Length: 137
Image (tube, rainbow, N blue to C red; front, side, top):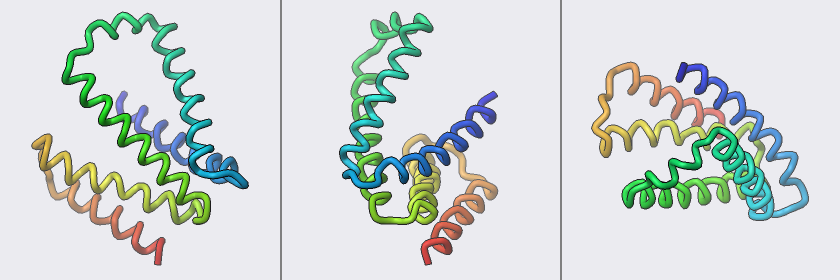
């Protein structure tokens, strides 16, 4: 099932790029990020409330909170820089560079999470990086 979620994530990420490029026209990336964040906040808390998962808040421990806070900061910075790039760059070039995050995730997961790095993973990461470089040039 995770593969279907990943495909849906990719589809919505593509829509995000196109819709964000149109939405950022005439305003700052910071304002666009703020509006987008409010929408995401409402949707995610709505899902948590209506699914009954709100009780999980009591189960959060110190490690959960620390790493989720850091993850939130990283997400916020990613979105701010993404929208700044969209303000002046072509979405067809900004999005592929943004997807270099996949390569960085592969490297960091190998270093910090001790995930295995097989030949397919290395080759796939290399092709993603090469594709992004080619699109930018």
